[in-house]
Image (cartoon, rainbow, N blue to C red):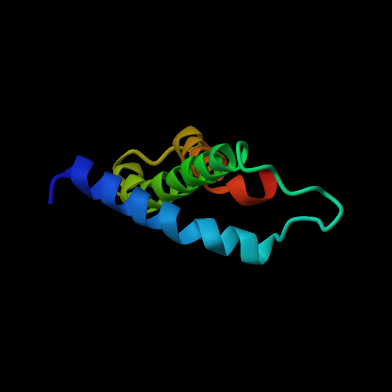
Length: 94
């Protein structure tokens, strides 16, 4: 499977899987009002793109390690871990 198709497929599947899971792990605070019907699609869109970012981070976690093995320096390892953290840590930062 081509790299771009595999990346898009994994990112979209992880994004769709993490949207309901995020609400189960971090439920909305009961005192915060629910968005009105005009605002709700925008919140769903934000959650979807956060999930896509999580999926891209998951893909980079797996596929980026292959590239890292050939050029392993301290700076490359720290950069690799930073990219993964920035992409996959969307749940607590939303």
